Length: 211
Image 1 (cartoon, one colour):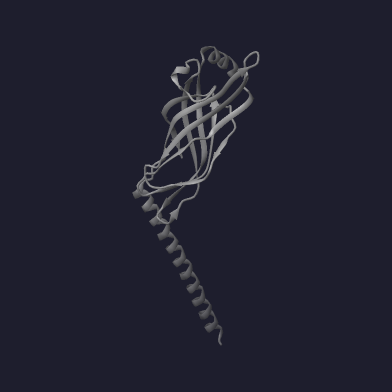
Image 2: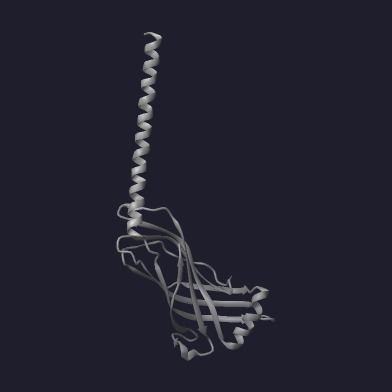
């Protein structure tokens, strides 16, 4: 074989490799473009959360000044998938309560679940904290709330979700849910007594959701 023939053969091989690479790139581009177009047409909406009620089993403030908090709640929170063509995987969802931006309970994990089109899920987790020290800058407000017998809390849910469109499943997205809850402990008649010391309060508050 002459030198000229070797060069010609090598050039042909490089052309074939380049064609294969461009074919693969073109195929991947078409697939990604198709997914983006489907995503844009369907326009997935965020799930909608509602804090329905809270049953208070314990809420005790101690210390001088009052800066130690023990609490035990059972909340009912519902989530609705507003999409008619997109499902939602809740891979992780942790629920807890905060007071003036300070976490006052442990995180309670809700089992992973799948939410179908237009489907509603309802969860009733317990959230509690024992002898939680309240930050000094919140102690004054906590004392005032104790005297008034009412408190504004924020029920939070943090987690990871994925979207399902047909057979396509997206990557994981961070989900943030914030549900305001005003509870009047002084007025037991504002709720329903469900045990020796437990009172169930109807709240029905829409939650802010960001993904």
